[in-house]
Amino acid sequence: MLLRGSAGDDGAKLNRDQSSYVRAVGRAVITGFQQWGSAFILLGRIVLSLRHLPRQFEQVVLQMMAMGVHSLPVVVFSAVFTGMVAAVQAAYQMQGLVPSIWLGTGICRAILTELGPVLTALVVAGRVGSGIAAELGTMKVTEQIDALETMAVDPVEHLVMPRFVAGAVMSPVLTIFANFIALIGGWLVAVLSVGITTQVYLDGLRFHFHTRDLMGGIIKSIFFGVIIATSGCFHGFAAEGGAAGVGRAATKAVVAAAVMILIFDYIVSAWIFR
Amino acid sequence: MIQIQGLNKSFNGKKVLDGVDLEVRTGETMVIIGTSGCGKSVLLRHIIGLMRPDRGSVSVDGTELNRIGKRDLYQLRKRFGMLFQGSALFDSLSVEDNVALGLRQHTALTREEIGEKVESKLGMVGMAGSGKLMPAELSGGMKKRVGLARALSMDPEYVLYDEPTTGLDPISADRINDLMAGLQEKLRITSVVVTHDMVSAGRVADRIAMLHQGRIIFCGTPQEIKKSPDERIQRFIRGEAD
Image (cartoon, rainbow over all chains, first blue to last red; front, side, top):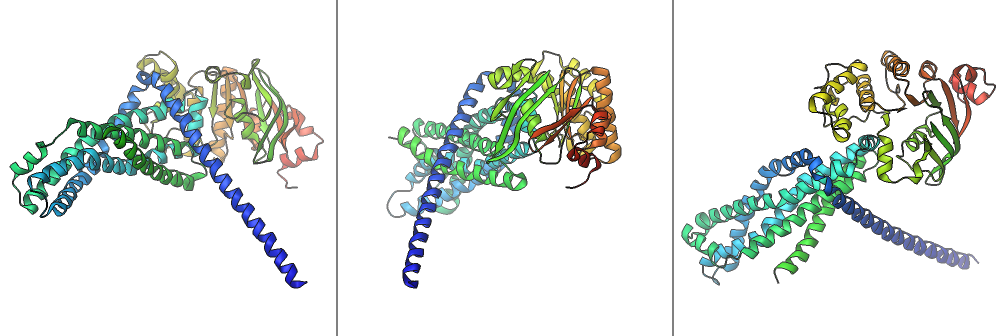
């Protein structure tokens, strides 16, 4: 009796575990769809609000300063080391296989197509994406967003659209800077450590240079800028529950932006560099 | 006139408003009282369309908020000002930019005209000359006054006050009460004040409505509420727990 009772209890527990597991998965799927739906709705509202761009021009300029100009030091710093690492890696990979004139070519293509746009975007996502989410999240939990609403000021037009435009414009600008600085970093390593001359490095850069590589990287960076701004705004607007909620929103904004940057890196690369 | 009919609102299955009926007449100050968490602020947020009811309706001068689109809702909101419980000043903007924001967005006034108007509104709330300060430099009472100046910036027909004296010392609270009463006397704005501060309610109210368990259980003048035989109201007035 006791044994039978115990087996029955185990079966009921298993059923309960299974159904709670199914419920949890179902809830996660629904939440995922809701999040994606809300993100697309936000994106749609941003696009619609672009018609009011002239009215928000001052805000756009302010955001360009915050996202672009103020990000320059960290972008430059990371770009120097990106170029240096690219040179070390390229020299190591080519050792005994490829003539050193190709070193500049390898570094150039790696930086323009991949390292420049992607690493710049990841650095900017960390700095700007989290900042946007924290700022808008704080505004949300302190009723500042509601205050805008009560003043008949559309928060998407006033807060999100300027950040969206600033992201789309300043991300490629930062990427161009980063590319240039990274090439200088690569040159430093090539000349000082690998031991090739400046002329050989420059010849390598020119050799096989395709405008498509440069433009491909810049097109990617536009997508990345939009992703960073939209993720920051979306998670900032969704913040709830005080300081902890704002912290969670900032973390989510960076993680989501980083993942989306890598996904879109593949999609845009597969589209452009076929 | 604001008309609220059969307003219902629930959060996660918990009913907060359970068929609220209330009428706020043009030019009067209606004070809504009730214990903390009874749904007063939720009711106020429905009046300005920040929340949508599950059932029932809110109408402003015959326009039902539920039945209008975003553009019309924004047009309607231009006739409102709202003072938030935590003031909700934009902390990245100076005091004058806070007060000027609505004017810059919705009017064709010149920079000078906006500056004059901002200064006049700040003067109205006793904050003249503080336009360059940032919200972080202000005390709680000063923030409320700037919030009030911002609420009045567009010369609204309706002003909503969400717990205007909560968190203030008695002197600052008294100053806010004076301001509300003074503005009411001068401008004859229709006001809805949500509070659990009976001193404040007594000072500014033309009529007082009490919200209890999601319903309005009393609506009348300050004199009438004092005479109400309802024990729940008397306990609230005396500040006694159940």
